Image 1 (cartoon, rainbow, N blue to C red):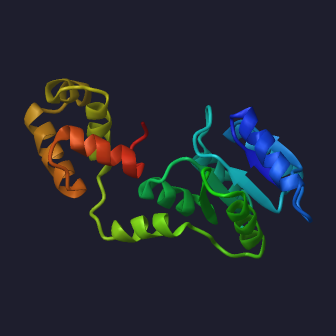
Image 2 (cartoon, helix red, strand yellow; image 1 turned 60 degrees about the horizontal axis):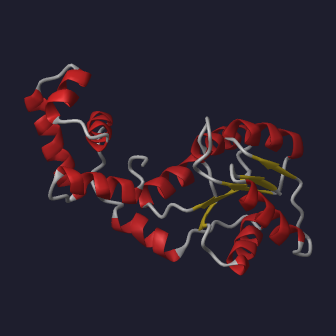
Length: 201
């Protein structure tokens, strides 16, 4: 098994849990997305535990590259993020499972075994969130860019200047964003986007 996380204590904890389980062994660990790809190529682990928030290349990007090279790779996202949009992106990138770091040790072991058997595993509450938003209209790439600037504290006028568009166009984008996210204000839209993992914090 390969564990990928940029927190040494997390890696130590995972090693202790995995190595104590009969039939399981942590063969390598990595602290970045780039390192994860190198270690995966070298060890070809049965299951890879992948954090999403990593320095440099993100966990999602690493998952996509590993999956492109090894379509049968069993990758389990192990993260603190509950957002449905983030979970969906990771699963589309090639992850077979998604688990919160706050999960019980038994849940981790059971999920690892399920992935090793070729199954997929997503916690019920996250699967429900994904289902709840499955028919939502997605934000366009320009709307995402506008929302990221707004999340950074920029006014409509500054966003317009940064994107070389009119302030009226920014307002049109914001109106569309509020409607798609069912938000009541700019601040509310940013809060929803952060919670769901539509934009990074």
